[in-house]
Length: 611
Image 1 (cartoon, rainbow, N blue to C red):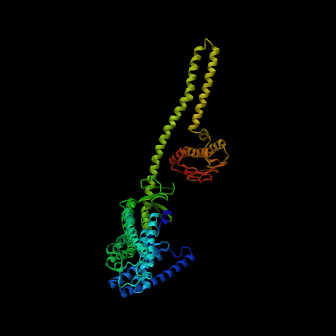
Image 2: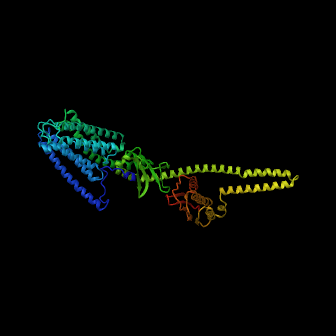
Image 3: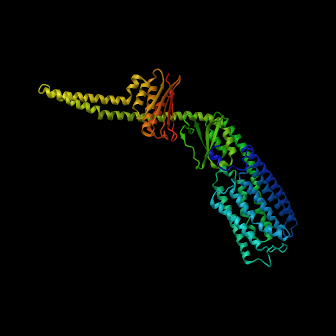
């Protein structure tokens, strides 16, 4: 996976980290965590048994059988799912939050007690588990709250829970329950301030849970299908629970123990019970979906009569219609799409995520997909591995298309360059040699008319015409030198490179081991690679030394120019280098430019020797 993907939160069912990661200290930490989780599990079992016993023996809880079952199942399911998630992904806080909801609920079952102290503590704790449930749902699946507004909502929920506990401990007891034990601070009725706190708490908590439900609905609506598949089994019942939790306070004719244990509380608690169940279902469904999706992907890719379908098959398997592929070309060190056009991969700040696909340790392609698929990294990895062979075949086809595309662009650039060069030659001939030849023709015509009448003047005019002819010849020679260096044609590559080095503005060392003469196109390509590289050294590199090396074997010529300058050259912004790419590419060669900032520049050209 790419760095972008690994930086995002893994789902709780993505698989536990290896015990070998981090060495012995990690293994001991895992062992300690498992012992702590076992202890929490034992405490949860004891708490569930105690809660059921208190409900069954309570004098003020209606329908004790139903409420006892809810007390046990609700608390135990949250704790069980939380401990499993916590052990599987200790770096994800969702497991701890699920566990917190379970224990908060078990604490609230003390309100079924027939004794004043435990009854007071249970009533005081009754506001904690809805606040913890809001926190858990808003943080799912990564376990962290993403936005300040969401963090503020969670803090408001816990604030209402503290307000609730404070009002109870101050003696607020609008329970109107004849069989209920007295609150510890209750003495003939609650104080007005405690009563106010109680009302504010009930209204505030209702507002918090309903706003949280609205936030979750908005989140599901704007989430892509691929991501929603991993969220709906938890968030849908969670939203239902949040919407139903305020029912007792709204329709029971005022707060009371009967309202807190009566049938109006059952829908909300049943919805809450579906949250840990949905978590388990989501984990199982995720595994089943991964197996099914990968199997279908392999089946689709096994049809050789339908090439080029890897992208569509992956998009369907992963449930992301926006998925795209980028194929890696190792020689050019760049990515291209299926048509061979260059592709820029999204950066770390993008909403798109990149997953690299390798085959036998070599990069083959990159899958660019929606960030929501980071919730199922195993699925993306398995799908990429299953499609690796098909992607390798498509990569080769994309490489051929890229080659064709490069040749098409190169041909267009060469046509434009040839047109520009013709215009330059025409302009230079018109402004230089042509003007001198026209002037010489006029002088010769005048001199012819004065040969007999004024031989002396005629001789002077002929001298001037001769000088103009000499200048015209020099102009033509200079123009011809720009088209093709005479020293290269007459003496070969090594003397031509020595001439370039002698003309350079800094010391240049030339090492050439080419032996006999090369084909003229190869010599010209090597010459112009060195000429352009040394020109760039003089203009931009701020170098004190450069070296030129030319090597030859049976199949290829390698030309390398290095300098000790400032580096940081960008080959994409230079018409000279693009022209060299075209010239060398026309000979089935390639150019590589390596220029790290502060470390100089290396230009390396490689092409067939022409033998």
